[in-house]
Structure formats: C-alpha cells, structure tokens
Image (cartoon, rainbow, N blue to C red; front, side, top):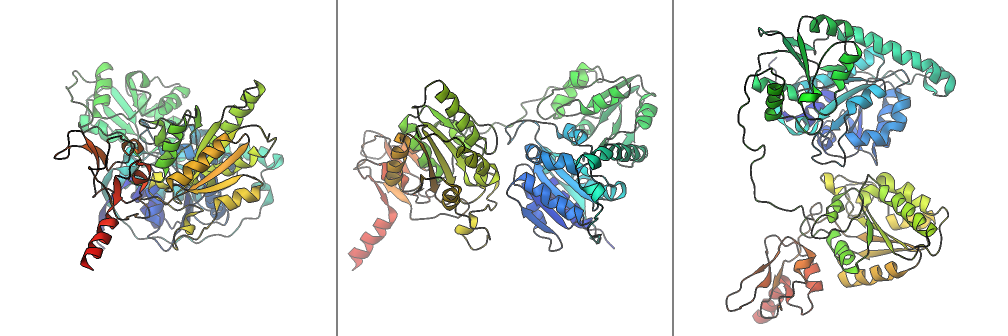
Length: 606
C-alpha cells in the first residue's frame, strides 16, 4: 500500500501519532505553543479530546483514562506542568495501566510565555522517561513510541517539544490507526492508593523501571550515531537544534539522542571514549551535559552557547567557532527580517479596551494584572498593570497587598485587580473563595472579571461561560451567579460597550470602602465576528480633542481633511466593527454610525 505523506506542523504530527497509536482520551488546557494538538484531534472520531478548565484537571482526565487501561495523553505548555505538578508527582509512582504520555511545549526565547523553563528537568524530577523529537516525522513517531514504551515498561512518558518545532512544518508519512483495547481498571489497592505504605514501596518500583529502560536505551534506534567525519570531536545533541547543526555541517561526528532521559551510561561511555573531545549542544539548561558529567564523562557545552533563548544557525556556528570546532564563523545578518514596527494592541472592538481606558483616567495607583489578552494593558499606551505573575495569581496577590497595607494602617488606597473569564475558571475561583476568609469591611479592593466568553489569547477556545453566547458550547456558567453563591454581597455586572453606564459603576466601586466585584460582559469581537455598522467622523463637528484617539482603537487616527487647517480624527471603515466606544467618548457628537446615513437616505427616498 502506498504511504500517504502530508505537510504537518509538529503539533499536528503529535495528534496524528496519538491517533495512529490507538489513543483513546486526550485532554489539554489551551496554551501556546501546544494549542493545535487538541484542535487537530477533534477531527478524529475515534479519540475523545477536550480542553479542560485547567492543566491539573486535564492531567487528571488523562490519568483516569490510563487507570481504565486506555492509551491517554495530556498536553500543555511548559508552565502548565507547574499547575499539574501535584497529581503528576504522585501518579508517576503508580504502575501505568494504559499507555500514558504528557506532552510539554517548552518555549525557549519566551515567544509567548511569562517564564522560560526546561521541562526535561521536570521529567527527571517526576521519574518519567523523556523523548525529544527534532522534526515533524519524529514528533509523530516518538508519540507512538512513547505510548508503546509506556505500556511495555509501565512507565509514564514525557514528550518534550519546543515552540519552533510545534509550529514548523515538515513532510510526515502517515500510517493506519492500530486499535488498542482498554484493559479495564486494575483494582490492586496496594499499587494505586498512594498513602505512605504504598508510596514507600513505589520509590523502589520507580527506580527499577527506569533502570530497565536505561537498558533499553543502550540499543534504542531513536539514538542515532553519525560517525562519518575524520574528527576526534563528538557533538551530542537532541531536538530541533540538531537540524540547525546539520545545516552547518561541522567537521565533527554527531550523537543525536531521541531519548534524553534515561541515557544509557554504558552506551555513553562506549561512544565518548573514542573521542578526545565531547561537546553537548542543547537549548536552555545543560541537562544532557549534566547527565553525562554525573556518569564521569568529560564534556563541555553550556559555556559556548546561551543558557536562554533559541539556538539558531548563527548561535551554534559562533559557539562552535569559540570552541575551536570550526575555523571561521560566517558573517550573518540580523536574525529577524525588518518589518514595520507595530506595538501590541487589543483587537479592533475588543471589549477590554474601555475598562483600561476607565482605569487610566481614574489614576488608580495600583492595578494587579493577570494572564490573558488583557495582559497587553501593561504596555503603552494604557500601562495599567503593576504586576503580572501567573494564571489566577492576581486575586491572592491583591489580598496579600491589601493585608500588608492594612497592617501599616494604609487601608484607604484603592486596589484594583483584573482577571479574564478563562483565567477565572482556570485558577481564579479558589483565589476569590479565599477573599471571604477574614474579609474586612474597610479594605478597599475592586476586582474586574472581564467576561468575553472565550479563551481569546490562544485562539478562541471555549471556556465555562462560552455557552451563554452560542449554542455550540455546552457549559453555561454565569460568573456573577457563581460569585453570588460563593457569598459575595457586592457583585455588579456591566456591559463593557456601554461606556457611560460602565464608567458610573466603576467610579462607585472604586470609591466603595470594602470589597466589590465587577463582572464586565462583552463578546470577543474576533471570536464572535462582531460586525455592526461602521462609524465615521464628521470633520465639520470634530474639535480635534483626541478623546476618541485615546481609546487606542486601531481604526482611529488623526488625518488631514481638505478645507481644514487642523488634523481631525478619522476612522478606517474597513477596520471598524461598530463597537461605538469612540462615539460615546466624543464630547461633541462628531462620530456617527453609518446606519444613520442609511436611515437618512431612506427618509429622502420616501
């Protein structure tokens, strides 16, 4: 049978691999760079896949399927593993009843993340074996292999993939799906109840299965030795940097590791003993380098390459030049092609924009931000977040600041925190619940929950309130109702697009001495294809005050009009989605809806 080939991203290749391996259940929380794995899996009817409310829950869903003996997978970005760490660190002590794979999308260079962490270290910490693919074909093949190893060695597996590989495209050969029947639940209480007696025995069990896998790694085909150079230097590498290394084609032999943990000590010593010099090439932390050094193998690496960011061809060549492996380093231009600079902005018609316009005008000193589209508000022109740490952290941080201020008798200054709906459901609910503990009536805290009813930052995946805006999504949780039922006595709802009414509520709540919550509703203009009649500026009325410009909506700009000396505001009608906020802030009603023109034309015709 002729093998079908397709061009796939690394994410799509992982999804294809899970499908081909007989995968049954996959769960994730949307976070770049791994979002598209679940998006792709939705195409396969044989696989149940979901975006869970957070990474911990996603991992638990996958664990449950594995407990039933089905092949399962949890997918998340690198910081998501931090959220999932609690069940993960205990689950890895149990036998694997059905093949289990955790996919972590590491982000060298912080393309879309608040930190840069190397989850190979997490994998070792959790006693998992780690595979590190270098292209789309390997991403698919390693996914299948990981599930096979997991079943064979009763071991949870970690597939580490980076942003570049997640989104890059390559030719991938496709195979037929192999059905793997679920075994059913293993009810051996001693092995699956992780209380001290079972957990103590599990320490030895984890050690033994990794030792068995190290023996497997000795002849593992995914660890490829390329000895085609007359050189006394060996470069050990893994992942996508291998592809960049091959572009340079240095006069050195290469050992490419597909399995980066555990590494066969016997094999490593056999191979490295043939060389005078061993250099390790890897992004971020010196993980492989440290593993080799623990084996007593002399090697070097991190001192020639950056500990942060991606390693492209230029970086690798320069490092090898300083290491003396290559005689000269080429002159490379800038890494990135020059483009017209553009500051990150909220989308046209974004409902979050009016909120930060209120905040800026209010001159509140302290605003605690969170993770989501609204994180952009920390940048020019709004500059309205003093701190952004992690998903849901804004709530607890605000309480901590407030309590510390109260201890110093500084309780009157208003504090504002902002959190999105997806983040609220992800990890903000527990923070809100904790606000009820030792709540004081005179501690001024105002919390904005920005409810655009989608997980907008990562592409519009559904969350628990999305079903209130459409019939496609099955969760219809009202945030105000939830907060009311928690026991909060001052929760108000506003329409983010009703500028004047929202401003009034905002001013009242900022002035209120105690704790108040504002649920700000407004559909994501991009997700829900908001397209109302566009607005335009009447230059005869416009006084050039720039009140509309200060809302920072992309279609707005100052321009020249024939017959007028001063610049007047204008609106690009092709960009305008008709949110009307600019018209509401105009003090002289110079901004009008194009629907008015249509009505006037109808009146003339009649």
